[in-house]
Length: 239
View 1 (cartoon, rainbow, N blue to C red):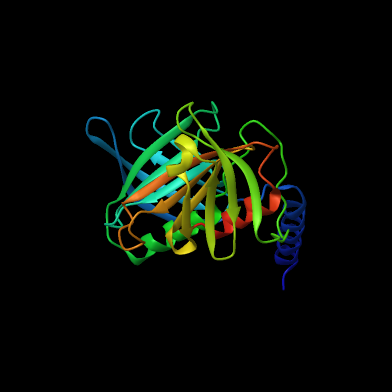
View 2: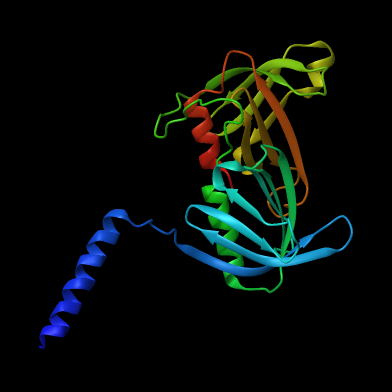
């Protein structure tokens, strides 16, 4: 081996070592697929880039690009066709909630993989609090949570009971009596935390065979933030 080649190899090795210590680590791009976004009038196109740390919608329309952190996704609603999905998220730039109606332009097996990956990664964010929700804390079933069911200001006070087989909302009598419910976990679709003391549960009306028919219920906890273990348990049950 010539002296010039030896010098080149040494330089490359030193550069690689230095870069490993100081250069930025780029996130892995898992998928990049063409996609459409429905607007109030018409639509626009772009690419959906799914990385291991976040999602990016690169639009051909100026100002329509979005960087979406997984922790900022509030809800992923996939329509029966499998092509269209609605993404509810918080815009990191201004803290406002947004909804993007997106549609795959082609029917590929990877589309389902993408949606499943997003669903696994999404955890509703703490919008106004640094409350830490640790993983791995067991839920001591049944878990009873003092809550208010959101009815646009005329709320119903009751208890949400989380069991291994069911979710139950218990209320006192009077006008709230007909708001009580018992739901099997098979009816549960998704959970998202809006604030530390506010969360949303979504149930199938007629089972997962009719995914577009859903019921949303919003609760406010009455004794501080939603307990860590319950938050994690609901998140793990997201479909």
